[in-house]
Each structure stands twice: as C-alpha cells, then as structure tokens.
Image 1 (cartoon, helix red, strand yellow):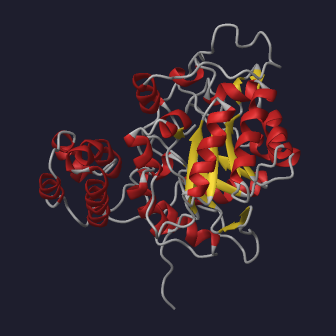
Image 2 (cartoon, one colour):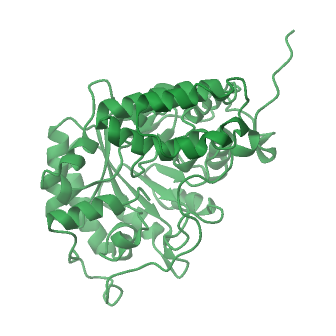
Image 3 (spheres, one colour):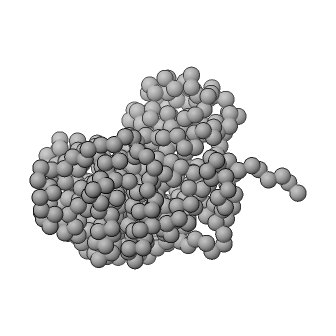
Length: 402
C-alpha cells in the first residue's frame, strides 16, 4: 500500500476531516444549484472576467463580478460596462451591484436581466469612507426602511432571477445591523444573504467573528453564506460546521492563490487535496492570468494590474524575492515572461504563506457617515450620491466588495 502524503495545512487545521458523504449540500439561489458551496467574493480590481474564469475552471461554485454601480452603468461608463460583461461560457453569470436610489437600481437590474445575467448580488457591506460618507455600502442597513426600498426595487425588477445581498455585522460594535438586514432580506424576497463577520470599523483587522454567521443562520429562513478568514480549504469546513451556514464566500485568501478553489472542491467532495503548486506551476498560472488580462483590458492596463498580482502570486517564495522590485515595474507581457522564467520551478509552496495577509487594509477606522445620518433611522430617502461623470468615476475607483 502506498504511503499517504502528509497533509499540507497550518497547525490549527491538521486534524480537520474532509466532508463525509452527504454532510453538506448544494445551496439554492432561486433556480440555481451551487456546488461546491463556495463563492468567489466580489472584489474591486480583482474579480473581473479573466480572474473569474480561472477560479471557475479550478472549482469555484459561484463567481461574482466586482461591484458595478447603478449610476455608472446607466450613464454608459465604458469601464463599468466592461466590468459587467461576460463571455458565453461563463455560467451562471453573477454580477454584484450597488445603488442608493431605488429607481436607478430597478432600471439597472432590469437591464442586466435582459442581458442574460443569472444572479444579482447587492453590496451593503463596503466599508470605504468615500462610499459610507454618502450613506452607501455598509451604512445602508442602518436604516431598515431605506434598505427595504432598495432591495424591493431589485427583487421586483429581477423577476425569476435570484437576488442576494452582502452585509457586514454593522458600523461598529455599538451599531450592529446584520440581524435586521437578514430579516429585511427575507421579507423582501431575497434568495440568500452573505455576512462578512466584521464591522465596517474593523475593516479587515483581527479575526472574523464567525459566531455572528451562526446567529444570522438561526434568525432567518433563507440561505446564509459566511465570509471572513477562509485562508485554507479546511477553514471553510470549520466555518460550515461551527455555524451551520449554507456556503462560504472566499475573498482575500484566493488572491494569487486561485488553486484554493481546487482544494475546496476536493474537500467538499470528500477527497484529501493534493496541496498547493510549486513555484513553476504558480508561474504558469500567473502567465495565463496575465495573458487573459491583456486580451480583456489591453497590454498596458493588464501589466499595471499584474504588478500587484505578482506580489500575491510570489508571496513567501524565497526564489522570487530578488525579482520583486522588477516585477513591480513590469510594462510588457514579454518582460513579465522573461522575469518569471528565471525562477526556480521546483521551489515548494511556503507553508508560512498560507495565512499571510493579502491586499486589504488592516487596522481599525472611524466610519464616516453623512452629517445627521443617524438622526432619523426611519428615513428612507436616498442620500445624494455621485452624479457627474467625474464623481461617478471617482466612486468606481473607491468601492470595495465588502
């Protein structure tokens, strides 16, 4: 009998068993059945079509676009329309939207559904100051009636296309909103709710408080998707077992590590995963990603994007340390190829990189809200958002998937 390969996992996950037959089920989004119960989180500047395709091919069950604003979409902003676009083989097609005006939201959803979108996700979790100071993102659930108006407009315009929402626990520990948001979602016909188990004030700092996911699951009758600190496939199993949630949303943990979805598919199907790739395979995936970005955005824009990606793809590898300065200035695809081909192909994936922080800002923040926003929590009047082309473009650059 062949010797079993040692498990590649952090110490806290060495003893987590793979899924037993029948332990977990596909989760339902209206007519959609999602298996494995794993969602690629919508992330600004990340989950464009090229990266969604890579994650889909490696095993993600649902793969959501980066957030698209209603005003940018309805004004015909070129980049907004490009980011909302897809290709025929992408199925199901899932788009995350944001808007603070119910009329705009309704029009946008109707247009997307007419264009063949299979699932609409709504962002009420973005903690970025430029969004919350307009009363948007994670500020919206503070006002239950306002949240209900926006969600109702989306659900009515979507028809048979399922709508989900994504929220945070609240603004800060003294202003918690996720349970009310879950009740609104269920009352208004939303098909599922995702919870990032941190407040807006926490940004991405500290440990996600998974207990809140379990509390939300107990409070509502629609599927609940848990988000926060899924760094390894084993974390997803632990989250679902501890909270009884219906699926997991994977964000920062997959940055520069799209093969995490292959490992997730394995463990949910009851198989021990093969472990992460050595540096040579990482290079091949990174180059496929770079070429796909160049085809989608053009080479110049793609290489600017790849500068951040190469920091994530090579994180923790000793062999790449000497090249990181050059990788952060790369301008041409051929230049990137030449740099990466010089790396040691057999260097194994560094275990210390499994749980290294990636991309998002840590630390705490004081959440900015519009002046007087908390004076009347029953007010359902849409706040003034960006209206000019310049304001819309600035908004597009500043948003976050939550």
